[in-house]
Length: 261
Image (cartoon, rainbow, N blue to C red; front, side, top):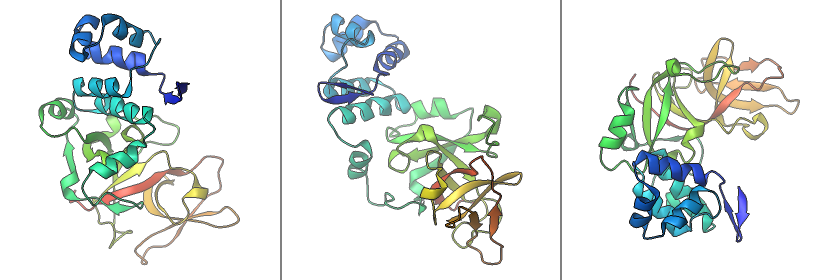
C-alpha cells in the first residue's frame, strides 16, 4: 500500500475497478452514471491517477456481485477511513464471533458446496453477502507443492467474521480420534495459513506436516526450539517433530466444527 492524503491505499484498485466494470459488462460512462460521477473520474481511477473516496469504494462494492470482489472493495473503504475491517465486521455481526483461536463454529455459519456448484450458487443464493468461499481440502498438499483443483473436495461458505482473510484460509477434515472429546473424527477445522511461526503458536492448535500427511494437534515449543504435537486424547502419544530447515506448520486452527463426514 502507499499513502494518499494521509491514507494508505492498496495499489491494486485500478485493475480491481476494471475487473468489476468488465464483469458487469459496463462502459466507463455507464459506471460513471451509476455512481453519479464523470467519465473522466472513472478513467482516472482505472489509470491509477486518483483513488476513489471511501464513499465511492462502498458504492463500487454495492455494484459488485456477492463474493470476494465485493469484500475487497469494502475492506479498502474501511482502510481509507482508518478503520480495522476485522473490528468493524465483528461489531456488525451477532455474538458468538471468536475472540480466541480454536473456537467452535456455529452450524448456522457454515455450509459446503461442491466444486462444480459453488460459483453459480454463490451468486444465486440470497443473503450471502457476508460469506466467503474457503476451499475444503481432500488432503493438504506437501509444503513444496502448490494447491491444485484436484486437492479440493468442495468449498465451505463461512461467515466473514470467522474468516476475515479468506484468501489465506483452508479447511481440512480431522481423521481419527486423537483430539476427542474436542474434535471428533470427520470434524472440519479452519486453518489460518498466515499463522505459521512456531514461536508464536506455543500451546495453540495447529495443522502440521508429520511424516506423510497433515495432523491436527496442540503445539508445544520447548526453550531449546524442539517442537512437539500433543493430542487431546491422552491415549495417544505426543509426537516429536524432527528438526528441519523447513517449517512443519501448515497454519493455526482458528475454528472447528464437529460435523459428520
